Picture 1 (cartoon, helix red, strand yellow):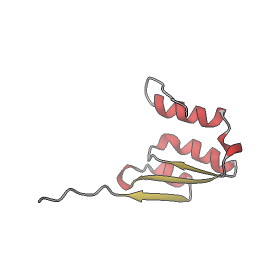
Picture 2 (tube, rainbow, N blue to C red; picture 1 turned 180 degrees about the vertical axis):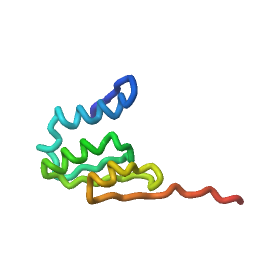
Picture 3 (cartoon, one colour; picture 1 turned 120 degrees about the horizontal axis):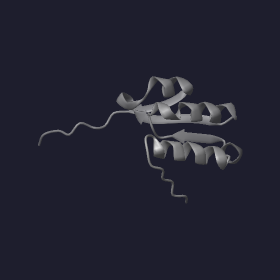
Picture 4 (cartoon, rainbow, N blue to C red; picture 1 turned 90 degrees about the vertical axis):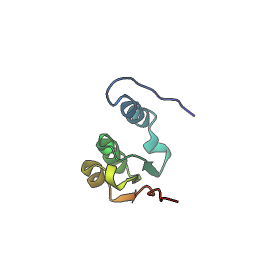
Length: 86
């Protein structure tokens, strides 16, 4: 397990992206799942797909950016359950 952290705007996103590329996850896996709707990950998704990985994005429907949605052919969206009054 690896703990990643980075300060600043999009710091955590940048740390995840950099770790995926520098550790060459494309050489170790056939599939990648991105659990985010943040458009920041569109370039990473395109890179992974370009390396031959099957990339799936999982996100809340209302949080999925258009840029990330169009980067991969496989997306899974969901809605959070609405609390019901007792």
